[in-house]
Amino acid sequence: MTVDVSQTWYVAYTKPRQERIALENLERQGFQAYLPMFKMFRKPRRGRPAQQDGFLAYEPMFPRYVFFRPDSPRQSLGTLRSTRGVASVVGFGAGFACVPPELLQSVRAAEQARNQADIGQISPFQPGCRVRLSDPALGGLEGLVQETSSKRVVVLLEILGRQKTLKVDHTQIERV
Image 1 (cartoon, rainbow, N blue to C red):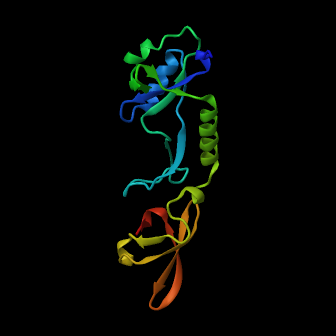
Image 2: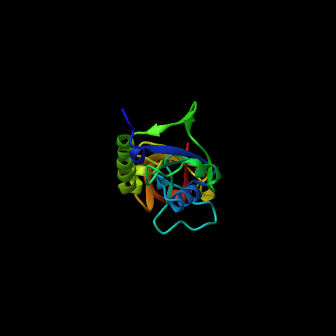
């Protein structure tokens, strides 16, 4: 059985936080490269404004890994040793680890589904989750999340023996 090298995908192990640099340089060398990005919920740091698209950021699905394949059967993999951003190529023994195209199709499908999800599906503040208000004025009260949207989280609190709902910004709460 012969393996079509142009259809074989390999995995590059990148230097820390240099996945995008490795991706760019692999593409410059004529490789087809793929870096799956995952939409993530990220709380902005205190004192910094939230991004316009809410609290969403795109991060590598597999930190420090980039998939690539030669553009032609004659393309040498030897250039990878000096590619900026690439630490090594994943291998077992003397050979490189191969990734079947079907597996990458599954990864692409998962990436697409996640990236089409709204913040309510991605947020760590899901209904039923216990949270603590981090606003100093409310003294660290704890409650349960009822709803999550892109702008606000509705929290159910017990105040003075009564249940009340409070709409808060994502930055005003933390998981307990």
